[in-house]
Image (cartoon, rainbow over all chains, first blue to last red; front, side, top):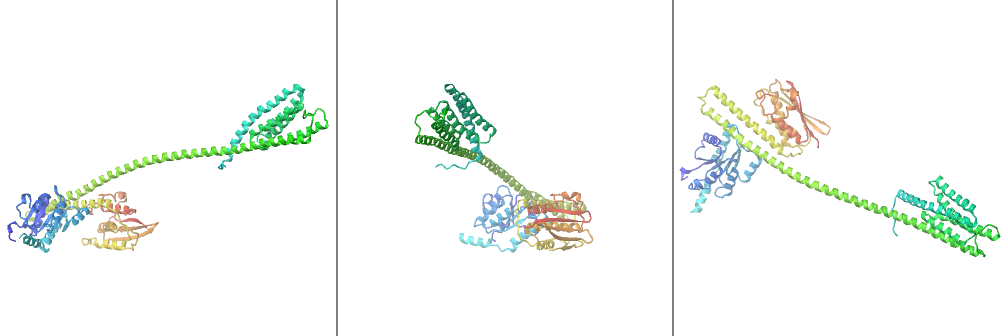
Length: 160
Length: 457
């Protein structure tokens, strides 16, 4: 953790600002609110992950530890973001959790086929929503042993 | 030889009657001609009596037989004899002029027209009997009997004469027979040709009909394709609609609910009691609308879902449903009686939804009773199985029973009994998918019984 200033724990991809705010508040309640980047469409999410456009000088070393991804977004949709991230060797180990209103079978099946790590249907009721967000955050951020650092070390070795 | 195909007797009769009609007409002229010829001969030898008497009697014999026995062929045989008699008359009138013998052969040839060889027989008999009798009478010296003007007369000449005559009759008989055979053959052939033509005509009609059917089928196929693609489009639109309902409608609800909760949490100390209550009402309504959307989506998803019918343990399903129904908030736990529910095959997932709706309804509407009682049972009848769920709860007025199974239709106020009005609509849709029926029987404050049938197969 040399570059502490730039560390990103969670990338939140959500086009609805109010929903994003709710999610952020829920994460804050669980003390997971630090180092969160919020982008509001799929294209920007891809720019961030692959260090393009406004994120060109972000440096690929500090990928987020988890991505919270909405499905239904303008321009580039959540499923496309998922596909691109999971198709790239550099990024496919980043845990992705889909937060969606949709419990359509087709969305679920496609997401898992593309390699999503979790699929959470956002409940309308706020308490259950908060609980779902914090459970997911806690699981992927605290409980689960991430391979991200391991991969970072590896790629650094390769780059000399 | 050509083998005549079988022909109908009626067809031959028709043809024969035509032959008879035409022949009779020709014979009319001949007989009158013969009679007149006798009259022409009469002045030469003064034989008026014979010409009028014999000729007249012959005509009377012929026409009377023909008129009195119209259906009989007797007159034709009489005609054969009459031709012989005319020959005898002429021989007599001409004083045995030899050429008059040939009148017999003219008659014989005429008879061929009827195409009956047997008609030659009476002619031959008359001729032979006449020749023998008159030849003998002339020979023994009877006066006024004329048979021949020849001086000599021997048995040998007579026999040769008779044989030649008989040969001619035989030949004419043979011709009549042959004509008859040819006639039969040509009748058969014309009928065969007619039959073939008819067959050909039918074949053409059939081909034409087939072509028409093909055109219709093709246009039908095009129509079906059109309709199918229209339906597919509509279906896709519907799916897109429910998808966006799911996503777009729930997001604002979540935001409403979430921020209300936030305010409550953060401003707890500052907020008045009334505002706090109002915020709770906002949240409750948002949550309820969320439930409504969820139920509606379940309901529409069910319409697209195919059912998977298999052998199931209905007792298991019902017991699981009862276990899952929340009874924590109830003041009195209902007493539930369950019969052995083993029954026909069905879709276990969908059937569980039906039971969940019916049983949770029974629990819900009987919870205000002192001793809530729920009975779950089964009856078998006429190839189907009927299940029922009976409670002793609030019941309802049967005059509104038609609204019971419609989406979003409720018979109770939300404040009395919560619910979205989708459960029974869902149950009905599932039962309909099983080719079953669902109905209810109830009385206000005395409870309700919901029945549904499943076909046994």
